Image 1: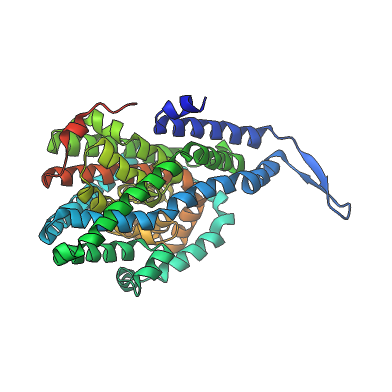
Image 2 (image 1 turned 120 degrees about the vertical axis):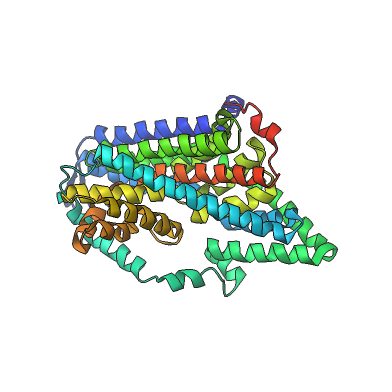
Length: 449
């Protein structure tokens, strides 16, 4: 039986786990009867079925999902450090890194602008904010206020200085991604300039990449079970009502993300610019998309993204090890789509007419703001306050909008992350092709479904 399970491709196993988790969680949420419990003093307390399901979800199910996410996050810094150093040293020429970096950042910014423009278009057609009442958001106001205050305390200067670590070891210990990227690139360049005298260090990092990737593959075998626990927890505690009030916003977001993935990444980049088959591209990234959807974290998905890019799509490790860690930090197309939609959602709910100039300002603001999303707690939703100001939403109204969406953000974030990860790999393929580091025979190979 174990061999039969192993023979199923990872994304299918993740999907099986996801559906089992949803079914089990909903069964708990709607199937448990009311029960009365007595404490040590004999005082009786009656819990409804939903209260019992919430307690079971938080106490017994959520820790298993959290353990899986922590296992993946445990690998983020070692993976970024080793793959970036090995990727830079594999280039053989420090000048090549500059060419690769410019192309990568330019393409990331271009796709982000496409993303927010598409989101605004879909939001204008679907109108997710019409008829929304904010009554359900009152209980979340204080939580959101605290998170917004925390986010506002961090200035742009602070964010820039965070890139340069006081100590690389401290940055690694804290799990800080940007400082790790910065130091790893410098270390790789240093190894390149030292030439043969640094060959033992280069060999060490090449070997370290193989070790970390092997550990990653072992942990990914647990993905279906981690996904099952995460989805069971969400459904047991929230139930299907989680999407009732935000059905149209969720529909607009999921539709826009699918359109962006298919037409921008698949149609324009892969098929149009690179002249490569879309079918093989989407087959090759299915594992990464499945993990992205379940973990809602681009950084947590990074190990499997690198594996998909190298093994399924033929991206050389020098490109995959440089472009993908950078993308997990600055490429936030899903967040840009979300910010544009939330701005329209708030304006429509408030009965405000959005002008063409405001559309342009929302597109520009969402593009720039989304780049900084990685370092802020509840990033996509909390950054919405900046964009809402563009369409004339007051601070108090912004707070209501954010508090209203806050409980449902996890399910919306899952699709945003799928978009981000798909974009990371599409850009990696493009840069690899332009740098002559893409094995098209591997790319065109019919990946197993």
